[in-house]
Length: 162
Ligand SMILES: CC(C)(COP(=O)(O)OP(=O)(O)OC[C@H]1O[C@@H](n2cnc3c(N)ncnc32)[C@H](O)[C@@H]1OP(=O)(O)O)[C@@H](O)C(=O)NCCC(=O)NCCS
Image (cartoon, rainbow, N blue to C red; front, side, top):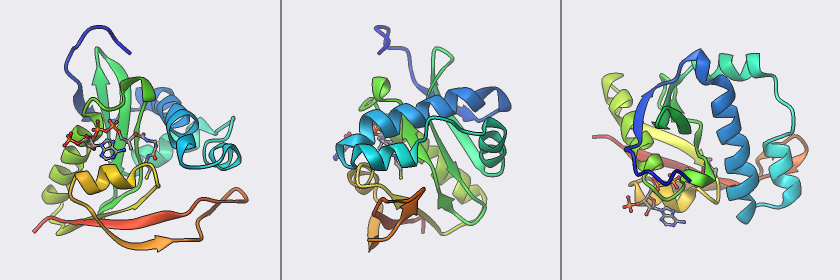
């Protein structure tokens, strides 16, 4: 973790953030989510190799935002035109410092700009209490959520904007 307490700020994702966001995703899953899922599950979720061109295409295909501190990408989030918040990841070295709260606030602003009345997500066990803290409610448990041969149960959650 940085010893300086520079502010974490949120800006739009750009192609230059491709590798940094992958690294955040990998560390968040392998080091943070492993508290709630098995080693086999987190390897399936964040495999050792990834097609970065496809990763960048997916990030650019949604409204994606990055949290940065001193120009270092410490987290990211996205939301589709339909209001699906698909990705919310914060590097464990910058955890519990409000990055996720800032990122979700930015998604809410984007969703309001899009005229949406609701944001929804498929929250991991790790993220569920954080989303609840940010006002989301659970709609249902997904007992079956298969990724690369591993079942990673999660939760459908939503936040009403109006
Ligand atoms: C979930 C995750 C994004 C949270 O990021 P973070 O930057 O550490 O979260 P924040 O510091 O912004 O915390 C947001 C709020 O949740 C609260 N919170 C954090 N962890 C919590 C927990 N385990 N239980 C309850 N509340 C919690 C914080 O206190 C904060 O509330 P406050 O602002 O009122 O104090 C991060 O831990 C992560 O990347 N986890 C692994 C990957 C993952 O599961 N991603 C989600 C996929 S759906």
